[in-house]
Length: 425
Image (cartoon, rainbow, N blue to C red; front, side, top):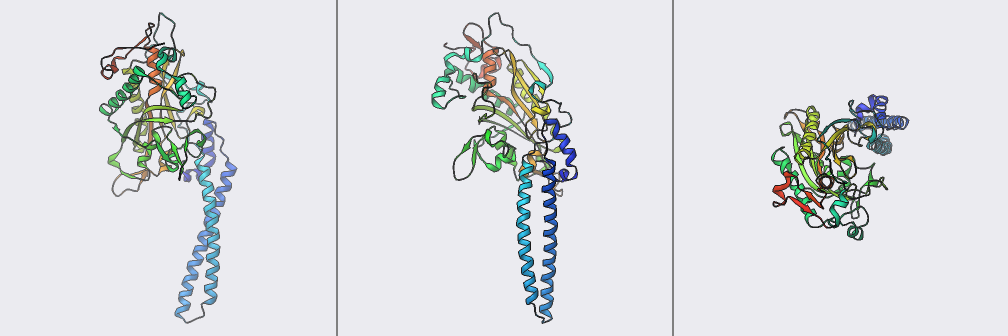
Protein backbone atom coordinates (compact mmCIF):
# COMPACT_ATOMS: atom_id res chain seq x y z
CA UNK A 1 0.00 0.00 0.00
CA UNK A 2 1.22 3.50 -0.78
CA UNK A 3 1.88 6.00 1.99
CA UNK A 4 -1.46 7.79 2.67
CA UNK A 5 0.37 10.94 3.85
CA UNK A 6 2.33 11.25 0.60
CA UNK A 7 -0.87 10.51 -1.27
CA UNK A 8 -2.65 13.41 0.43
CA UNK A 9 0.28 15.74 -0.23
CA UNK A 10 0.59 15.07 -3.95
CA UNK A 11 -2.12 12.89 -5.54
CA UNK A 12 -1.44 14.37 -8.98
CA UNK A 13 2.24 13.42 -8.82
CA UNK A 14 1.35 9.87 -7.78
CA UNK A 15 -1.16 9.65 -10.64
CA UNK A 16 1.57 10.68 -13.09
CA UNK A 17 4.00 8.11 -11.65
CA UNK A 18 1.41 5.33 -11.88
CA UNK A 19 0.70 6.21 -15.51
CA UNK A 20 4.14 4.75 -16.33
CA UNK A 21 2.67 1.31 -15.62
CA UNK A 22 -0.53 2.09 -17.54
CA UNK A 23 -2.61 2.56 -14.39
CA UNK A 24 -5.19 5.36 -14.44
CA UNK A 25 -5.79 6.71 -10.95
CA UNK A 26 -9.36 7.87 -10.24
CA UNK A 27 -8.36 11.23 -8.84
CA UNK A 28 -11.89 12.61 -8.50
CA UNK A 29 -12.99 9.57 -6.53
CA UNK A 30 -9.93 9.84 -4.30
CA UNK A 31 -10.49 13.55 -3.66
CA UNK A 32 -14.15 12.98 -2.77
CA UNK A 33 -13.31 10.17 -0.36
CA UNK A 34 -10.44 12.06 1.21
CA UNK A 35 -12.53 15.22 1.67
CA UNK A 36 -15.33 13.21 3.28
CA UNK A 37 -12.82 11.50 5.57
CA UNK A 38 -11.20 14.81 6.54
CA UNK A 39 -14.53 16.61 7.11
CA UNK A 40 -15.90 13.76 9.22
CA UNK A 41 -12.71 13.57 11.26
CA UNK A 42 -12.90 17.30 11.99
CA UNK A 43 -16.57 16.99 12.93
CA UNK A 44 -15.85 13.96 15.11
CA UNK A 45 -13.07 15.80 16.94
CA UNK A 46 -15.33 18.85 17.40
CA UNK A 47 -18.12 16.75 18.92
CA UNK A 48 -15.63 14.94 21.17
CA UNK A 49 -14.38 18.31 22.41
CA UNK A 50 -17.92 19.53 23.05
CA UNK A 51 -18.73 16.34 24.93
CA UNK A 52 -15.63 16.75 27.10
CA UNK A 53 -16.61 20.35 27.89
CA UNK A 54 -20.19 19.28 28.67
CA UNK A 55 -18.94 16.57 31.04
CA UNK A 56 -16.83 19.12 32.93
CA UNK A 57 -19.84 21.47 33.10
CA UNK A 58 -21.90 18.70 34.70
CA UNK A 59 -19.17 18.15 37.26
CA UNK A 60 -19.05 21.84 38.16
CA UNK A 61 -22.86 22.05 38.32
CA UNK A 62 -22.98 19.09 40.70
CA UNK A 63 -20.47 20.73 43.02
CA UNK A 64 -22.49 23.95 42.97
CA UNK A 65 -25.75 22.07 43.70
CA UNK A 66 -27.33 23.20 40.43
CA UNK A 67 -29.91 21.33 38.33
CA UNK A 68 -27.86 19.12 35.98
CA UNK A 69 -30.76 17.53 34.07
CA UNK A 70 -30.60 19.89 31.06
CA UNK A 71 -26.85 19.37 30.87
CA UNK A 72 -27.24 15.58 31.02
CA UNK A 73 -29.80 15.69 28.19
CA UNK A 74 -27.46 17.87 26.13
CA UNK A 75 -24.61 15.45 26.77
CA UNK A 76 -26.81 12.58 25.60
CA UNK A 77 -27.61 14.42 22.37
CA UNK A 78 -23.90 15.02 21.78
CA UNK A 79 -23.19 11.34 22.35
CA UNK A 80 -25.83 10.32 19.81
CA UNK A 81 -24.46 12.73 17.21
CA UNK A 82 -20.91 11.54 17.90
CA UNK A 83 -21.87 7.91 17.46
CA UNK A 84 -23.55 8.72 14.14
CA UNK A 85 -20.56 10.69 12.83
CA UNK A 86 -18.12 8.03 14.05
CA UNK A 87 -20.09 5.34 12.21
CA UNK A 88 -20.11 7.42 9.02
CA UNK A 89 -16.38 8.10 9.42
CA UNK A 90 -15.63 4.39 9.77
CA UNK A 91 -17.62 3.65 6.60
CA UNK A 92 -15.76 6.29 4.59
CA UNK A 93 -12.42 5.21 6.08
CA UNK A 94 -13.13 1.62 5.06
CA UNK A 95 -14.08 2.69 1.53
CA UNK A 96 -10.93 4.79 1.26
CA UNK A 97 -8.80 1.92 2.54
CA UNK A 98 -10.33 -0.43 -0.05
CA UNK A 99 -9.63 2.17 -2.74
CA UNK A 100 -5.97 2.34 -1.64
CA UNK A 101 -5.64 -1.47 -1.59
CA UNK A 102 -6.44 -1.55 -5.32
CA UNK A 103 -3.66 0.91 -6.22
CA UNK A 104 -0.36 -0.66 -7.37
CA UNK A 105 3.11 0.34 -6.28
CA UNK A 106 4.85 3.32 -7.86
CA UNK A 107 7.51 2.19 -10.36
CA UNK A 108 11.08 3.14 -9.57
CA UNK A 109 12.52 5.87 -11.79
CA UNK A 110 14.79 3.28 -13.43
CA UNK A 111 11.83 1.22 -14.72
CA UNK A 112 11.72 1.53 -18.52
CA UNK A 113 8.65 2.71 -20.37
CA UNK A 114 6.58 0.15 -22.25
CA UNK A 115 3.27 -1.67 -22.33
CA UNK A 116 3.96 -5.42 -22.69
CA UNK A 117 6.75 -7.97 -22.26
CA UNK A 118 7.79 -7.20 -25.84
CA UNK A 119 9.00 -3.83 -24.53
CA UNK A 120 11.26 -5.25 -21.81
CA UNK A 121 14.88 -4.28 -22.58
CA UNK A 122 17.54 -7.00 -22.43
CA UNK A 123 20.22 -6.08 -19.90
CA UNK A 124 22.72 -8.84 -20.73
CA UNK A 125 23.06 -12.47 -21.79
CA UNK A 126 25.03 -15.40 -20.37
CA UNK A 127 26.03 -18.50 -22.31
CA UNK A 128 25.36 -19.48 -25.87
CA UNK A 129 22.33 -21.50 -27.05
CA UNK A 130 23.43 -25.03 -27.97
CA UNK A 131 23.86 -25.95 -31.61
CA UNK A 132 22.54 -29.43 -32.44
CA UNK A 133 23.28 -31.56 -35.50
CA UNK A 134 19.73 -32.87 -35.23
CA UNK A 135 16.28 -31.24 -35.09
CA UNK A 136 15.70 -29.92 -31.56
CA UNK A 137 12.65 -31.34 -29.79
CA UNK A 138 10.63 -29.64 -27.08
CA UNK A 139 10.51 -31.10 -23.57
CA UNK A 140 7.22 -32.94 -24.15
CA UNK A 141 8.76 -34.86 -27.04
CA UNK A 142 12.00 -35.49 -25.15
CA UNK A 143 10.32 -36.80 -21.97
CA UNK A 144 8.00 -39.13 -23.85
CA UNK A 145 5.87 -41.30 -21.57
CA UNK A 146 7.64 -39.99 -18.42
CA UNK A 147 5.52 -36.84 -18.76
CA UNK A 148 1.95 -38.08 -18.64
CA UNK A 149 -0.68 -35.46 -19.41
CA UNK A 150 -3.38 -38.03 -20.15
CA UNK A 151 -3.22 -39.27 -16.55
CA UNK A 152 -3.17 -35.73 -15.11
CA UNK A 153 -6.20 -34.80 -17.23
CA UNK A 154 -8.13 -37.75 -15.78
CA UNK A 155 -7.09 -36.79 -12.27
CA UNK A 156 -7.51 -33.04 -12.33
CA UNK A 157 -8.20 -31.64 -15.77
CA UNK A 158 -5.99 -29.54 -18.02
CA UNK A 159 -2.81 -27.75 -16.94
CA UNK A 160 -1.63 -30.35 -14.47
CA UNK A 161 1.13 -32.93 -14.85
CA UNK A 162 2.03 -36.47 -13.83
CA UNK A 163 5.71 -37.42 -14.01
CA UNK A 164 7.20 -40.91 -13.84
CA UNK A 165 10.44 -42.59 -12.86
CA UNK A 166 13.74 -40.88 -13.73
CA UNK A 167 12.00 -37.60 -14.58
CA UNK A 168 10.72 -37.39 -11.01
CA UNK A 169 14.25 -38.05 -9.72
CA UNK A 170 15.62 -35.24 -11.88
CA UNK A 171 12.87 -32.94 -10.58
CA UNK A 172 13.71 -33.82 -6.98
CA UNK A 173 17.46 -33.42 -7.62
CA UNK A 174 16.91 -29.88 -8.84
CA UNK A 175 15.05 -28.94 -5.66
CA UNK A 176 17.75 -30.28 -3.36
CA UNK A 177 20.54 -28.75 -5.44
CA UNK A 178 18.96 -25.29 -5.28
CA UNK A 179 18.27 -25.49 -1.55
CA UNK A 180 21.82 -26.62 -0.83
CA UNK A 181 23.38 -23.77 -2.82
CA UNK A 182 21.17 -21.09 -1.27
CA UNK A 183 21.54 -22.31 2.32
CA UNK A 184 25.19 -23.36 2.29
CA UNK A 185 26.66 -20.70 0.00
CA UNK A 186 24.27 -17.74 -0.09
CA UNK A 187 23.36 -17.53 3.59
CA UNK A 188 19.61 -18.15 3.42
CA UNK A 189 17.74 -19.89 6.21
CA UNK A 190 15.40 -22.61 4.98
CA UNK A 191 11.84 -22.38 6.23
CA UNK A 192 8.84 -24.68 5.80
CA UNK A 193 5.52 -22.84 5.55
CA UNK A 194 1.79 -23.63 5.16
CA UNK A 195 0.44 -24.03 1.65
CA UNK A 196 -2.97 -22.67 2.73
CA UNK A 197 -3.20 -19.13 4.11
CA UNK A 198 -5.87 -16.71 5.29
CA UNK A 199 -7.17 -13.52 3.69
CA UNK A 200 -4.97 -11.24 5.81
CA UNK A 201 -1.86 -13.05 4.62
CA UNK A 202 -2.84 -12.74 0.96
CA UNK A 203 -3.73 -9.07 1.38
CA UNK A 204 -0.43 -8.19 3.03
CA UNK A 205 1.64 -9.19 -0.01
CA UNK A 206 -0.75 -7.68 -2.56
CA UNK A 207 -2.54 -10.71 -4.00
CA UNK A 208 -5.83 -9.52 -2.54
CA UNK A 209 -8.21 -7.86 -3.05
CA UNK A 210 -7.35 -7.12 -6.69
CA UNK A 211 -6.41 -10.63 -7.87
CA UNK A 212 -8.90 -12.83 -6.07
CA UNK A 213 -9.97 -14.41 -9.37
CA UNK A 214 -6.40 -15.63 -9.97
CA UNK A 215 -6.07 -17.76 -6.81
CA UNK A 216 -7.69 -20.96 -5.57
CA UNK A 217 -10.21 -20.52 -2.76
CA UNK A 218 -10.51 -23.18 -0.04
CA UNK A 219 -14.05 -23.53 1.29
CA UNK A 220 -14.33 -23.55 5.08
CA UNK A 221 -15.34 -21.63 8.19
CA UNK A 222 -13.01 -18.75 7.27
CA UNK A 223 -11.60 -17.57 3.95
CA UNK A 224 -8.43 -19.47 3.04
CA UNK A 225 -6.45 -19.72 -0.18
CA UNK A 226 -3.88 -22.02 -1.76
CA UNK A 227 -0.62 -20.11 -2.01
CA UNK A 228 0.32 -18.78 -5.48
CA UNK A 229 3.96 -18.57 -4.38
CA UNK A 230 6.03 -19.08 -1.21
CA UNK A 231 6.52 -15.31 -1.16
CA UNK A 232 3.10 -15.01 0.47
CA UNK A 233 3.56 -17.07 3.67
CA UNK A 234 7.31 -16.41 3.99
CA UNK A 235 7.00 -12.61 3.80
CA UNK A 236 4.11 -12.72 6.27
CA UNK A 237 6.34 -14.33 8.89
CA UNK A 238 7.27 -10.75 9.85
CA UNK A 239 3.72 -9.39 9.63
CA UNK A 240 2.79 -7.24 12.65
CA UNK A 241 6.29 -7.71 14.06
CA UNK A 242 8.82 -5.10 15.19
CA UNK A 243 12.33 -6.35 14.45
CA UNK A 244 15.60 -5.10 15.83
CA UNK A 245 17.77 -3.29 13.32
CA UNK A 246 20.65 -5.66 14.05
CA UNK A 247 18.52 -8.59 12.84
CA UNK A 248 18.36 -7.24 9.29
CA UNK A 249 18.61 -8.51 6.69
CA UNK A 250 16.52 -11.64 7.15
CA UNK A 251 17.13 -14.08 4.29
CA UNK A 252 14.72 -16.98 3.83
CA UNK A 253 14.52 -19.77 1.26
CA UNK A 254 11.52 -22.07 0.92
CA UNK A 255 10.49 -24.85 -1.44
CA UNK A 256 6.73 -25.10 -1.96
CA UNK A 257 4.15 -26.06 -4.51
CA UNK A 258 2.40 -23.05 -6.04
CA UNK A 259 -1.22 -22.89 -7.20
CA UNK A 260 -2.59 -20.45 -9.75
CA UNK A 261 -5.85 -20.36 -11.66
CA UNK A 262 -4.24 -18.51 -14.58
CA UNK A 263 -7.69 -17.09 -15.27
CA UNK A 264 -6.42 -14.55 -17.79
CA UNK A 265 -4.19 -16.86 -19.81
CA UNK A 266 -6.62 -19.14 -21.67
CA UNK A 267 -5.07 -20.32 -24.92
CA UNK A 268 -1.55 -19.17 -23.93
CA UNK A 269 1.42 -21.46 -23.23
CA UNK A 270 -0.72 -24.55 -22.94
CA UNK A 271 1.90 -27.07 -24.08
CA UNK A 272 3.83 -29.04 -21.49
CA UNK A 273 5.18 -27.60 -18.25
CA UNK A 274 5.26 -23.92 -19.21
CA UNK A 275 2.09 -22.73 -17.47
CA UNK A 276 0.38 -25.06 -14.99
CA UNK A 277 -2.17 -24.67 -12.22
CA UNK A 278 0.21 -26.50 -9.85
CA UNK A 279 3.98 -26.19 -10.01
CA UNK A 280 6.95 -25.89 -7.64
CA UNK A 281 9.48 -23.21 -6.88
CA UNK A 282 12.41 -22.57 -4.61
CA UNK A 283 11.73 -19.03 -3.44
CA UNK A 284 14.16 -16.46 -2.02
CA UNK A 285 12.82 -13.75 0.31
CA UNK A 286 14.73 -10.92 1.96
CA UNK A 287 13.53 -8.51 4.65
CA UNK A 288 15.92 -5.58 4.66
CA UNK A 289 16.77 -2.16 6.03
CA UNK A 290 15.26 0.53 3.75
CA UNK A 291 18.76 1.74 2.84
CA UNK A 292 19.85 -1.73 1.69
CA UNK A 293 17.00 -3.01 -0.50
CA UNK A 294 18.51 -2.07 -3.88
CA UNK A 295 21.71 -3.82 -2.89
CA UNK A 296 19.58 -6.82 -1.88
CA UNK A 297 17.88 -6.84 -5.30
CA UNK A 298 21.26 -7.20 -6.99
CA UNK A 299 22.17 -9.95 -4.55
CA UNK A 300 19.03 -12.02 -5.20
CA UNK A 301 19.54 -11.67 -8.96
CA UNK A 302 23.10 -12.95 -8.54
CA UNK A 303 21.90 -15.83 -6.31
CA UNK A 304 19.40 -16.97 -8.95
CA UNK A 305 21.97 -16.58 -11.72
CA UNK A 306 24.36 -18.86 -9.82
CA UNK A 307 21.89 -21.74 -10.22
CA UNK A 308 21.57 -21.20 -13.97
CA UNK A 309 25.32 -20.87 -14.40
CA UNK A 310 26.05 -24.01 -12.37
CA UNK A 311 23.57 -25.88 -14.56
CA UNK A 312 25.21 -24.29 -17.63
CA UNK A 313 21.89 -23.10 -19.00
CA UNK A 314 22.01 -20.08 -21.36
CA UNK A 315 19.90 -17.18 -20.14
CA UNK A 316 19.36 -13.47 -20.35
CA UNK A 317 18.30 -10.78 -17.87
CA UNK A 318 15.56 -8.29 -18.74
CA UNK A 319 14.17 -5.30 -16.88
CA UNK A 320 10.37 -5.29 -16.79
CA UNK A 321 8.82 -2.19 -18.32
CA UNK A 322 6.09 -0.23 -16.57
CA UNK A 323 3.24 -2.01 -18.32
CA UNK A 324 4.60 -5.48 -17.49
CA UNK A 325 5.43 -4.74 -13.85
CA UNK A 326 3.68 -6.76 -11.14
CA UNK A 327 1.13 -5.05 -8.89
CA UNK A 328 3.30 -4.75 -5.76
CA UNK A 329 6.73 -4.34 -7.37
CA UNK A 330 8.68 -1.11 -7.66
CA UNK A 331 11.19 -2.81 -9.96
CA UNK A 332 11.59 -6.34 -11.35
CA UNK A 333 14.41 -8.16 -13.10
CA UNK A 334 13.47 -11.36 -14.94
CA UNK A 335 15.91 -14.12 -15.80
CA UNK A 336 14.87 -15.92 -18.96
CA UNK A 337 16.33 -19.31 -19.86
CA UNK A 338 16.88 -20.44 -23.46
CA UNK A 339 14.53 -23.19 -24.64
CA UNK A 340 15.68 -24.82 -27.92
CA UNK A 341 12.34 -26.62 -28.41
CA UNK A 342 10.52 -23.28 -28.40
CA UNK A 343 13.42 -21.39 -30.02
CA UNK A 344 13.08 -18.56 -27.52
CA UNK A 345 13.89 -17.38 -24.01
CA UNK A 346 11.30 -17.94 -21.27
CA UNK A 347 11.13 -16.52 -17.73
CA UNK A 348 12.48 -18.85 -15.05
CA UNK A 349 12.95 -16.33 -12.23
CA UNK A 350 11.33 -12.99 -11.44
CA UNK A 351 13.12 -10.89 -8.80
CA UNK A 352 11.38 -7.84 -7.34
CA UNK A 353 11.95 -5.03 -4.87
CA UNK A 354 8.67 -3.97 -3.26
CA UNK A 355 10.22 -1.23 -1.09
CA UNK A 356 7.78 -0.59 1.81
CA UNK A 357 4.63 -1.40 -0.21
CA UNK A 358 4.07 -4.87 1.29
CA UNK A 359 5.46 -3.88 4.69
CA UNK A 360 2.88 -1.10 5.08
CA UNK A 361 0.07 -3.56 4.43
CA UNK A 362 1.66 -6.11 6.78
CA UNK A 363 2.81 -3.57 9.39
CA UNK A 364 6.25 -5.18 9.31
CA UNK A 365 8.63 -2.82 11.07
CA UNK A 366 12.02 -2.50 12.75
CA UNK A 367 13.74 -0.25 15.27
CA UNK A 368 17.15 1.15 14.39
CA UNK A 369 17.95 1.35 18.11
CA UNK A 370 16.03 0.55 21.29
CA UNK A 371 15.03 4.23 21.55
CA UNK A 372 14.06 4.67 17.89
CA UNK A 373 10.55 4.88 16.54
CA UNK A 374 9.53 1.83 14.48
CA UNK A 375 10.06 2.12 10.70
CA UNK A 376 8.78 -0.02 7.87
CA UNK A 377 11.16 -2.66 6.50
CA UNK A 378 11.62 -3.28 2.79
CA UNK A 379 10.70 -6.64 1.27
CA UNK A 380 12.07 -8.46 -1.78
CA UNK A 381 11.68 -11.86 -3.33
CA UNK A 382 12.65 -13.92 -6.36
CA UNK A 383 12.54 -17.47 -7.62
CA UNK A 384 15.73 -19.35 -7.18
CA UNK A 385 14.41 -21.04 -9.41
CA UNK A 386 11.06 -22.24 -10.78
CA UNK A 387 11.52 -26.03 -10.76
CA UNK A 388 9.32 -27.06 -13.68
CA UNK A 389 10.73 -24.51 -16.10
CA UNK A 390 14.29 -25.35 -15.05
CA UNK A 391 13.50 -29.03 -15.57
CA UNK A 392 12.17 -28.47 -19.07
CA UNK A 393 15.19 -26.25 -19.86
CA UNK A 394 17.49 -29.16 -18.97
CA UNK A 395 15.46 -31.58 -21.08
CA UNK A 396 15.70 -29.30 -24.09
CA UNK A 397 19.26 -27.99 -23.72
CA UNK A 398 20.79 -31.36 -22.78
CA UNK A 399 18.97 -33.61 -25.27
CA UNK A 400 21.45 -35.77 -27.19
CA UNK A 401 19.39 -36.65 -30.26
CA UNK A 402 19.58 -40.35 -29.39
CA UNK A 403 16.52 -40.55 -27.20
CA UNK A 404 18.35 -39.44 -24.09
CA UNK A 405 19.22 -36.42 -21.93
CA UNK A 406 22.61 -35.76 -20.37
CA UNK A 407 22.65 -34.75 -16.69
CA UNK A 408 24.31 -31.38 -15.88
CA UNK A 409 27.55 -31.85 -13.94
CA UNK A 410 26.19 -29.87 -10.99
CA UNK A 411 23.43 -32.44 -10.50
CA UNK A 412 25.55 -35.59 -10.64
CA UNK A 413 25.93 -35.74 -6.82
CA UNK A 414 22.12 -35.87 -6.61
CA UNK A 415 21.41 -38.50 -9.29
CA UNK A 416 23.23 -41.46 -7.75
CA UNK A 417 25.92 -41.33 -10.39
CA UNK A 418 23.50 -41.49 -13.30
CA UNK A 419 24.87 -39.31 -16.13
CA UNK A 420 22.22 -39.84 -18.75
CA UNK A 421 18.46 -40.38 -18.73
CA UNK A 422 16.58 -42.30 -21.38
CA UNK A 423 12.83 -41.91 -21.72
CA UNK A 424 10.45 -44.27 -23.47
CA UNK A 425 8.66 -42.68 -26.38
